[in-house]
Image 1 (cartoon, rainbow, N blue to C red):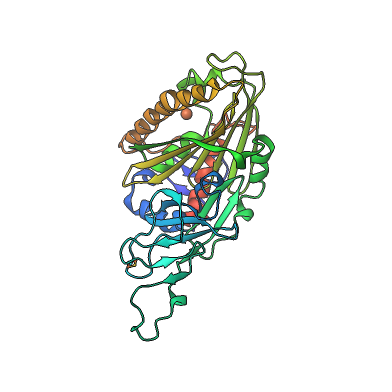
Image 2: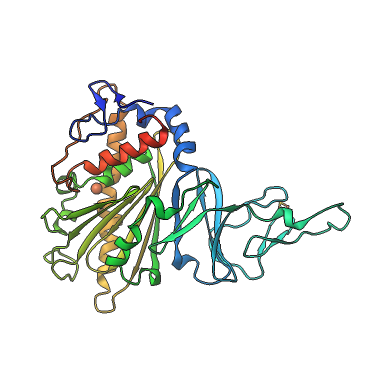
Length: 372
Ligand code: FES
Ligand SMILES: [Fe+2]
């Protein structure tokens, strides 16, 4: 394991001020992408939903992490559990989408029935099968964590508890988004993007581009620097909204908040309503990713138009601007005319510089075992 990562013009080092950026091969090399599956996606906490998706016993959600079908189900005891979404008879995928179970989980192939807690309750025509023991065929469980109202699953049975790397994350949610567990899902959006998942996270990790590339969004916050909190596996920044923004009824200084959670979750909460916009990026082939966005919130009866304006601002304006940016960067990263630049960091380590980008790249290199 090395202390630095060499590129064409210099080396990536642990000091953002001195370091050259992650060399472009990290975004274009099939071998690195393959290593990321095992080293990152199969052993990190990945967001699969929000508690509003699984409020009652029998409510479930499904997701795919690193190609693995998973589910989370609320049991009769009120506990939420995660399992591989795979039948233990012949491997048929059990559940689709999100929904509410009545009796239990019935496999669509040969109707094996599991209860909400993953125990096999009934397997047809097994009376003549010697030593058939239903207790050996429960669903395969996975580590699950709920924090700040969000539901996370980890594909590694040896996962460190969520609270270790993300200590303090739930407080950053609780402090600003009171009653978040009572939010509902207002919208879900999906995008196929011609850029590596890290390019999208990179873009979200720095506010340096916002005044240039998002003219409308940049009128929504006050230009004072704001503040940032960095945990081991997450970063949080806080700014305040600008009441002069056109299209929403705003008070001056409503919070304008952002989070990045290792590895692939980026979130924003904009002024004007109680809301959380959560973006999850999954690799989808070389130089491509799938972005899944869930918008959670509460509609304020006194200013319902703010939520509509929020969705318009996100879906029609600044997310489109970001997609154009990251796709252009991916083309540049694949070009022979570029390997890497320098991090533009300020002494305050602020979100309007690229210090969050350097932190993210450090985590990538550590996870891959490339940097000591
Ligand atoms: S594969 Fe599920 S019951 Fe046969
Ligand atoms: Fe952006």
